[in-house]
Length: 275
Image (cartoon, rainbow, N blue to C red; front, side, top):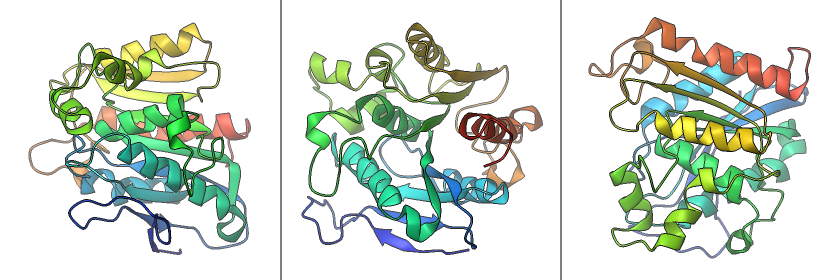
């Protein structure tokens, strides 16, 4: 396995705050076989990036034969569009290095958790926005082929997560910005397919976020798979002992989401159960 730390804006002018430079950590499988890849966006309410939703997730995907990458994107006090620029740039880096890293450039999924899932969904629906076309980003090259959204923050309007919205958009965001950054309002025929899961008991990010996004996808006939589990709090990650922090708990039924997700990716990317 090739493990690298890549500063995504090296050699490119980009505004940094508090000395933090966004970067990728790579989990690239050895060998010459072309494989799909998953680009992971940990959650953290746009205040930080959660370690529980980073390497443990990457290792699950590599165990199933998929390259994995974790993006440590800019968070507060950085605001929109900086996180989305970071994710767009990271997606372009994967495609620009697809031959070197043996990535199938047409099989790259973005996987996000909570606010990281909002970022992932935002790329899926806003990848072609003109403000993303900057040095280091080519519109179209930044489009994910699939979205994996775990207990996602979706709407910045209804059922919104206050911390995520204020950290990303500020306390006085205008209505047009709130609308643009509510992915359920931006779905189109160009939006990639999605795998979504959530729990009914989530008290931090209401399950309605996932339901609204699934309904928006359905209106445009975008393929999706949606799993709503009856039990479990917000932030379950893998829902097993590895990602339990002593407060979250272990939920064996929910922990099956990762296998369901990989089955879904297999079918989406090849149709025959193989990456």
